[in-house]
Length: 492
Ligand SMILES: Cc1cc2nc3c(=O)[nH]c(=O)nc-3n(C[C@H](O)[C@H](O)[C@H](O)COP(=O)(O)O)c2cc1C
Ligand code: SF4
Picture 1 (cartoon, rainbow, N blue to C red):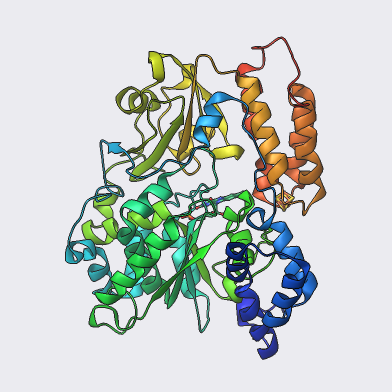
Picture 2 (cartoon, helix red, strand yellow):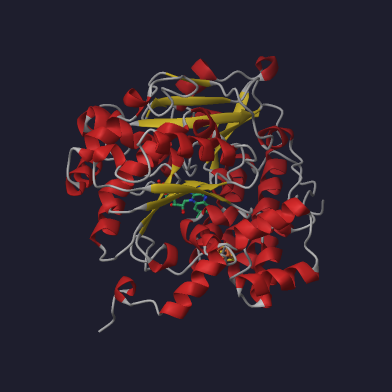
């Protein structure tokens, strides 16, 4: 009989080794601040952490944050260049149904802020999980997995310890919703994390923040301290038996580290490459313990459900995509904006109402779903914003980042840019992805060749990155393949 991984006891020496390796990336960050990555320092670091030197060297050379040349991609096409600029506060929030973003940038007292947590603590953890299941909430990080089922799975896996991780890796080009929410209303995310922790029986949580979000870790850390001082985090929260602490983990780069198992590997001080599944993180996640990884926007929806009830949450949206969608628009826009609308609203309606293009130019297409997503040509702008409708036209909703491409955009240049991005960000673990993404760069204008490579990528790659790496190129070729006389961009 095969024992579930979570029931296999971790031998004590291995556990101690794991704890030491967990401080490897935070220690490398401190080294970076001191600007010292010499061989002597690596030896010293390995000795002081009690880790093999080879491990320290391989981990430090894997992450862009600790390499000399951090910039992997210089975007050639103008809308992508614009979208790669990370906006700064004050962020612009608009929308016809503001829930997650309702309090962004608005001061409100602690009592109103934590009404969702109070409601959760007045119920049993099972009831809280059931409310999330009933609401129909699906994860906003890209895969759209039902959040309540994820929580129930972690809760029902026997363990002495469980974890909640807020995924703010936000690597999609042009996506900045998680950044803006964290910097404008971090309390709602801490509240969502506390509710998740109470529901699954976790006492420790982490906010995993994208490397390039330099100011965000201190915003979150300050809020953790303040929430603790008011009794909303820490020991015996709001006079209950529930303890929950939160810590910030600063990521060190690599797009694939947004994938939850790669993210967990990086938190354990390993190279951030995806793990084989099953076991899923809810069965054996951080340090082999049941772990819920949820996106910032997913956690941002949770307090509303506890405060207003599952029926109020699902009162808007479509049958399979309940609630609201938080979207960011960048690229060829006058100003990058964050829009919150009910799921099911037509894309053209959102564009008409909330997005302005410089010079009043026509929008040719929308890039959605990040570098593993697709493009929506103008003729399909009647498509509703939802998981099912957008996947059906080959341009998934993903995490909600949308890049506006105006009438002057060279679409094949966009395809080439994204193909180069995929090749640069492949973690190199498996050959189909490592070689296939490079082959797409070489032959991205040759549709039959791209289709053949895409098929290999889809069927033979180890993780979702490789499996979807050719989707965007294919989507552009399908809709705009005839646009250009075939001048070659692949050798740039
Ligand atoms: C290559 C890759 C990158 C990903 N990047 C992110 C990311 O930046 N943020 C995120 O929340 N989820 C990302 N995901 C999805 C996560 O693996 C995971 O499904 C998600 O964090 C779960 O949260 P949710 O259920 O709230 O959506 C990525 C997945 C893949 C395959
Ligand atoms: S598919 Fe790509 S990103 Fe995923 S494990 Fe293989 S090489 Fe790494």
